[in-house]
Length: 169
Ligand SMILES: CC(C)(COP(=O)(O)OP(=O)(O)OC[C@H]1O[C@@H](n2cnc3c(N)ncnc32)[C@H](O)[C@@H]1OP(=O)(O)O)[C@@H](O)C(=O)NCCC(=O)NCCS
Picture 1 (cartoon, rainbow, N blue to C red):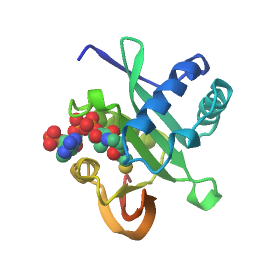
Picture 2 (tube, rainbow, N blue to C red):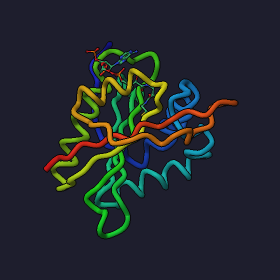
Picture 3 (tube, rainbow, N blue to C red):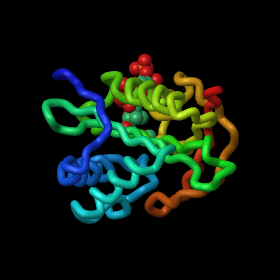
Picture 4 (spheres, rainbow, N blue to C red):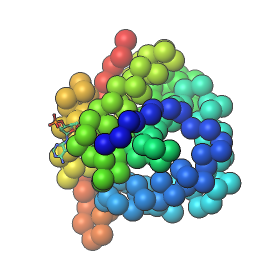
């Protein structure tokens, strides 16, 4: 693996991040979101980047290798006033770059940003059938809070989501 740069996106990254997002969501069945449920064109991707830039409790971070994005982490803070210090975590690494420590590094950086923003609680759901991600979140101190029984329809079978959270303060 070449040197990896971690940074928040600029509007000019929209075309590259559009393709990256499609690849990421196509490669793995472990995401709840389908490829066409992210951005359908460069303008939509630019709008997503702008919205992350302008929303105080939102963070988007990418890992870049030689100018190409290979991993993404996001924090989406609550939009209701009383939930503004709670944020949902999203994480994904291209298949070609998994098991190299990038998921851990992105999550560590994301948590640093969350602390800078004064966020109190990070939460997520992970598919019961995704041991890699469950192990990563366990190792990073996320605690299991419950199960959403059969909440996701994958092909013809229902899969449970495990609810996990970490308190930062
Ligand atoms: C889950 C994911 C983010 C992990 O990222 P990664 O860069 O591969 O993870 P790291 O290299 O930092 O490894 C961190 C830990 O994750 C766990 N892990 C990662 N890949 C694993 C695998 N294939 N099997 C078992 N554990 C795995 C291990 O605990 C690993 O630590 P270890 O190598 O010391 O055992 C990545 O596999 C991914 O993007 N998967 C597809 C999308 C996804 O599942 N996203 C999460 C949705 S909730």
